[in-house]
Image 1 (cartoon, one colour):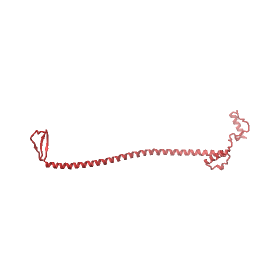
Image 2 (cartoon, helix red, strand yellow):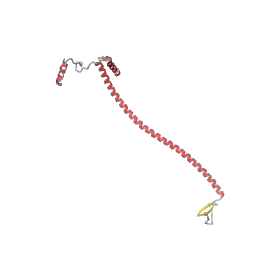
Image 3 (cartoon, helix red, strand yellow):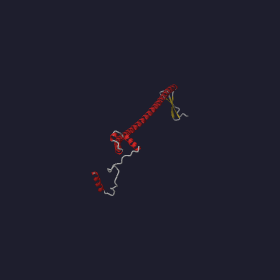
Image 4 (cartoon, one colour):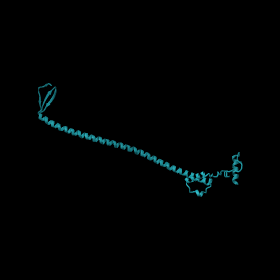
Length: 190
C-alpha cells in the first residue's frame, strides 16, 4: 500500500480522510468507533429479531396457505359431490317414474293373467266361479298346479260348439269359406 498524497483532510466530526491506492479512507477516533460498534450491535440484534419475526411470519403464512389449499380442495370435492348428487337425484326421479309406469303396466297384466287363470279353472276344470272369485294370483296358480299334479284334465275347448269332440266324420274338408259360413249359420239355428 502506498500513499499517493501525503496530505490528509480533517473532517468536522473529527475524523481524518487519507487517500490510499486511489481510494479515500476515513479514519475515526477510537471513542467514536466504540459508539459505532455498540450501535452496530444494537442494529444486529434488531436485524436478528426482524429475521426471527420474518421466519415466524413465513411459517404462519405457509401453515395458513396449506389450510387454504385444503379448504379449496374440500370445496372442489364438495362441489363435485353436489354435481354428482344432482345427477343421481335426477336419475332416481327418472327411475321412480319408470317404476310407477311399470307397476301400472304389471298390475294390468297381472289382473289379466289372474282373470285368465280364473276362467281356465271355471271353464276347464268346472270349478264354481263363486268359490274362487276372491282368490289371488298365487292361490289360483297353486290350484291349477295341484289339479295338474292330480292328473285331472281340463275339459276340451269348445270352439266348434260340440265340446271339442266330433261324433260325425269330418264333413268340412274341401269346403270353401262361403260354404263353411253357411254350415255355421245353419248349425247356429239348430
